[in-house]
Image: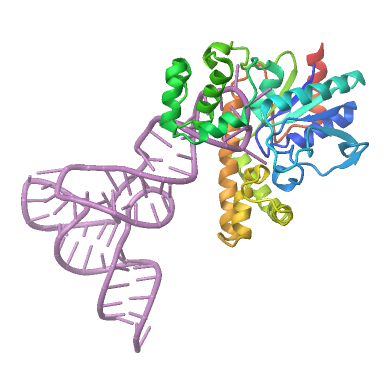
Length: 303
RNA sequence: GCCGAGGUAGCUCAGUGGUAGAGCACUGGUCUGAAAAACCAGGUGUCGUCAGUUCAAUCCUGACCCUCGGCA
């Protein structure tokens, strides 16, 4: 039984989760594919924290699964799930309540619904596939796994490569190995979804982008000075490519902000679409949600 | 005021005598180890205004309005 606070970007989930955790003496597990990176603060809306006994802590609340990954590394769903499981067990062992907060829908679902036993990503195979064209890859997939080939458009290179990779590593089509256990079910948990009226959320995105812009420029400069580039995985996070273009003088500040706002809006839309699938979520209006209200519902729900 | 260029989708623009398209934006959706990713689908329009020519005008003609250059 965990508390989950989810919502689109700029919905205010981090602050609410911190308040909730503070009140009940819980600890937060971030479910955010970008806050894992060290060095990204403003651009990922990661709350400023300090290290207390090696644990990232915000206002006294332990905030796990953030700020640990070097910028050049790539993280993935499977790694997140296994690492977070360990942390959750430790929190429960202390008789504390884990509060999951984040907007990476796939990670959340993988964590609570569970993934099928599929092989890990294989960099060697990916490199091999990358040398082929989209059409070639899709054709190859169709020859070994027609069901996957029909389900995945040829243009979706990432999913085509993954399906092919699964077949090459196991000899079994991905469509056969997938049992359907990975579905829109987050288990018996208290699942809060922060909902905003679309225009209002868009305004928040615009305001926030303007506020964090200089901070993003500074942290990006710092990373570039350390030798990282536009190709570094962390710097491919939403908005950073535009910041780099601005630093390089390729676009104006106004153009960079406009582009980041658009990308963030589009991202928020994808999140809304993803979270729309869950039936058992408890929807809170983002403009009115408070930790007290959430905990009030939580206490009712527990009974 | 004169000369030139131009007014077509929210933006930038292409185009045709038989009422119109692209990219981006926008809307909806997909999602099993890259997910802040990668995709799929959808055209949303008084073609500046008015008049003329024509079977038919966004396109041709005229007037007017507006924008941007240049000259005054």
